[in-house]
Amino acid sequence: MRILLSLVLLMISPLSQAQAALTVEQVAPGIYLHFGEHQLPDRNNHGAIANIGFIIGDQCVAVIDSGGNPQQGAALKKAIEATTDTPVCYVINTHVHPDHIYGNAAFKAENVHFIGHYKLARAMVTRGQYYIDKAAEQLDIELTADNLIAPDMPVKKHMTINLGNRELVLTAHRTAHTDNDLTVYDKKTDTLWLADLLFIDHLPVIDGSLKGWLAELERLEKQDYHYVIPGHGPLVTDWPAAMQPQKKYLTLLLHEIRAMIAQGKFIEEAVKTVGRSERQNWKLFDQFHAKNVTTAFAELEWED
Image 1 (cartoon, rainbow, N blue to C red):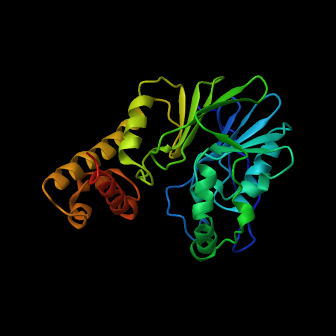
Image 2: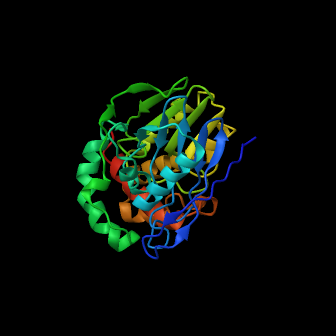
C-alpha cells in the first residue's frame, strides 16, 4: 500500500508570482514522488508535467529529476527541506528532456554532484540554445545556460552510489526513449526508477530508437521489482504487467511500419494509417503519435 505524505509548499509562478502547491508522496520507505499531469508542456503549466522526486539515505539525499522549470526545482528543494534534515548530495537527471532538467539550478552547491548518462552532456550542448530560445515562447519561463547543468559524474554503464545505508545502482541504457536514458535502482526497497523508459496512460514518445526501446523493455520485463516509477503516470506495483500496453503500442509500430516499407509505401501514408487502432488507449495520442511514426519510419527504412 502506498504511504501517503502530502506536503503543501510554495512555488513561485513564472507568470503571476502567485503561490502554488507542490505535493510529494512517500511511495516507498524513504522514496518521495511528485506526480506530474498528462499535459503538453505549455505556458499554463510552465513545463512542470513529469514525475520528479527524491530518495533519502542516512547521510545523503538523491534528487531524481529536478523539474520542468526553475521554480519547480526550488519548490522540490523546499519539499526536501520540509521532509528531512539530511543534505542533498546528488542530483540525478534521467535524460535530457526539459520537464526533467530545468530545475537543476535550484540544487547547485559546492557539495552537490550532478549525475547523468555519459551522453547527457553532449545532448545538453546540442539542444541547449534551442531550449533556451523556446522556453519563454512555449513555457513562459526565462532560462539561461546556467539552468542546464551537465553531469560531473557521467555514467558509462553502471554506477553505485551510497546515500548512507542505502545503495542506488545507476544504469546507462542503450538508445531507447532518448540516447541518454538513465535508470535508478534502490536496493533497499526493490524500487526501479524507470523514468521515461516507461509511460503509463500517456502515449510513449520516441526521441531515440524504437528497436532499442523494445530491446530494453524485453530485458527489463524479465526482472522482478516491487515498485517501478515511470516518468509519466502512477506508481507501478504489478511489474511487468503494467508495461505491456506500452510494449504493445511500440511493437505495433514496428510491425506495421515494416510492412509498409516492404510494400514500398511512403512515410506520409504511414503517418496517416500506422497505429491508429491504439488511439483510444492513450492520452495525448494526437499530439505525439505522428512524430513517433515519423521517427520510427526513418529508423526502420534503413535497417538491413
